[in-house]
Image 1 (cartoon, rainbow, N blue to C red):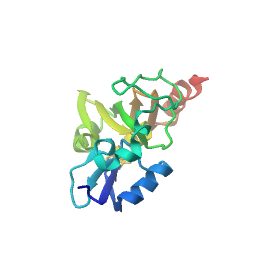
Image 2: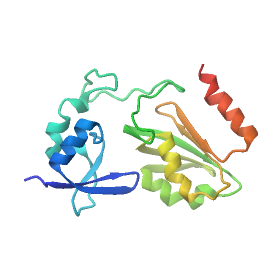
Image 3: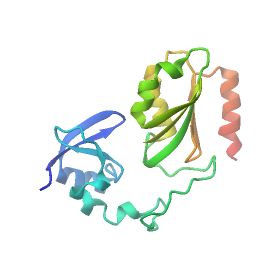
Image 4: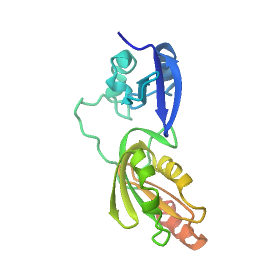
Length: 190
């Protein structure tokens, strides 16, 4: 017996409830993926949609396809892209699989300690140094930055590196530092 009403969770926000038929339509539109977090309405037992029998027909062959459309082997490991390579994400904040991030905070402000609960809410997270954290989650570099930004003070800087997909995102750097970062990470890709 399948639950007919489901809730979706994205960026720590809960949406729904939706019927299975509505989710089928969302999947067809590309708004609902095998990596989407779902739970039966009223429950907080979040799981990826690919793990729910109710959605097997939605994602049967599609969940085993690579971004380039080729079918993937079921246990084929995800291959990291070269650093600086263009991603193929359709959303600026969410991606279809987990990624590894390195977050660098301002040392002076001690922001890394203050926002520890927010980092753990994103996924698996651990401290590498006083101002450096590693996080594994299904967001993009921009999504991680946006999820952490509300917990920072207006002048605190943050630099996010998506080590899996070769992407970066940053905020609150002085003009000189900002131009150097842009030159190295944006203009250096040419």
